[in-house]
Amino acid sequence: MNTKKMANQFKQRGVAAVEFALIALIFFMILIGVMEMSRVLFYMNTAGEVTRLGARLAVVCDVGDPIVETKMINMLNILTAPDISVGYNPTGCTSDTCQSVTVSVTKSINTFIPLVPLTFTMPSFSTTLPRESLNSATNPVCS
Image (tube, rainbow, N blue to C red; front, side, top):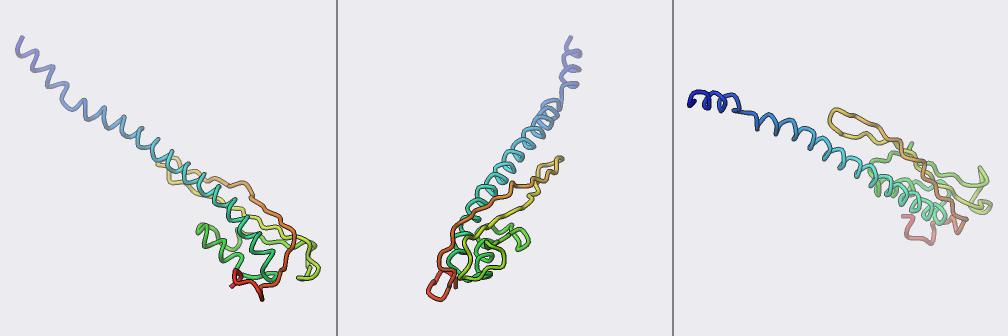
């Protein structure tokens, strides 16, 4: 009987380590997935704020002022200039003839979820504001 008991104990050696490895793999994959989805949602929220900032700057700075894109990229550093669109309405207007400004952001985000590489395309965030001064001469925000 003693030898049978010892043989069973020998067969059970390492089972806990194997079970832990299997469960830990799944647990950490889910944990990293939750963190990555949180990061994606953070970027989406920040993209909405960035478009509002860009629109507020675009209506008080010169038409086509590069400071608008620069400050937007500084606020959300995953953005690049091609991801940002600043449109003045009507098209081709000057600071005297523009009626509104529309700023939009479109971006794809790559995740780092183990074994499941996903790319999320954020919805296009857009903000339109009526024109204000469109003159940065008297506005320190535009420098």
